[in-house]
Image (tube, rainbow, N blue to C red; front, side):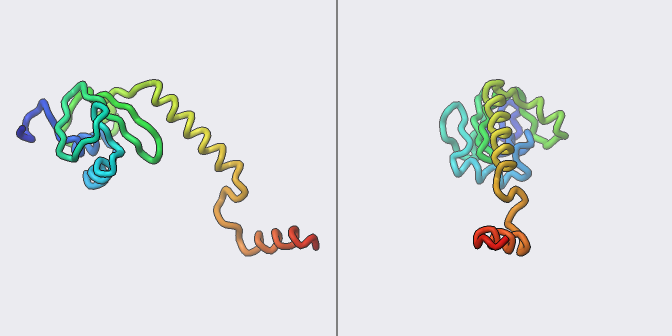
Length: 132
């Protein structure tokens, strides 16, 4: 299959053109790690996809289920890139719910802003020693 063929496209290049990854190298890495499945099968970077294929993608521990709607061999602006796929509504809802849970767990964390400062540690030590 020739790359100039407008009916097929390499998976890594499509993921890059659809703006899921900033570079093709990142897309290739995710494919190699098995985080991208096409039609429920693990594939290689050089896998050619066609419109109608289903792509299962795990990105930042969040699931995506996409149906390839179109192919574009050039990286275009985000509104145009969104036209390259249709997303499964159920998986999108689960992903949004997971994002909300992650945000809630970060808010309830003891130190949502990161490590305690030296001043914070001194105050913690005072409380632990009971000399506050």
